[in-house]
Length: 113
Length: 111
Image 1 (cartoon, helix red, strand yellow):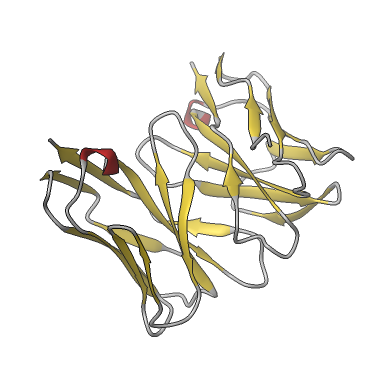
Image 2: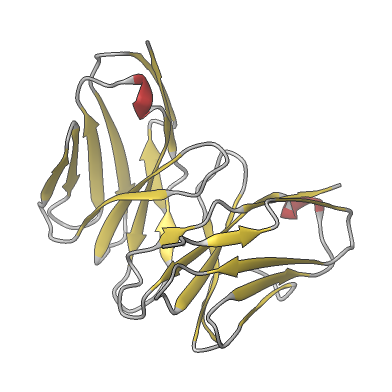
């Protein structure tokens, strides 16, 4: 049973560029959440997708957008990258109604130069 | 602003010692979770506490949820080098799908 998988594992971009990160949830899960974890900090909630719609959103600018596909996989898009966007981006999946039982992927380490 | 504060932020101890990590907030949570994260990996759920005053044990780890459901503690007995990692607490609200994480406690256990 595959867990949460994320791609790519590492990514280097320059300021102003755009990036797309991908996530496949754990088998049987229908809800995907994205978190940003800066170095030395705890993860911060970006948004959550269920039934292909954004259901909850954290305090992140509109440069951060996402999408969920019919197979429950998800993408996180970040436009106009800033140096401060450098972080580990974590995807977590869960079942609707069991949002408190999250399974995290290993993350995508994004470096913005 | 919703905030979970963890203390201490860093802890370096010798194998066999005991330690306690604290997680405090001014908010009431429907549940509180503890995660352990190793470098290059995502957080792994250790335990979820739901009821005020609840105590859960996981081998040498003891988790407690405060009576008012605003705070929690993690106690490790006879720490082992394998316990080394980042420990995160996270609060959940029953009507939302997001977790509020503390900043984490980095634990190093020296052999």
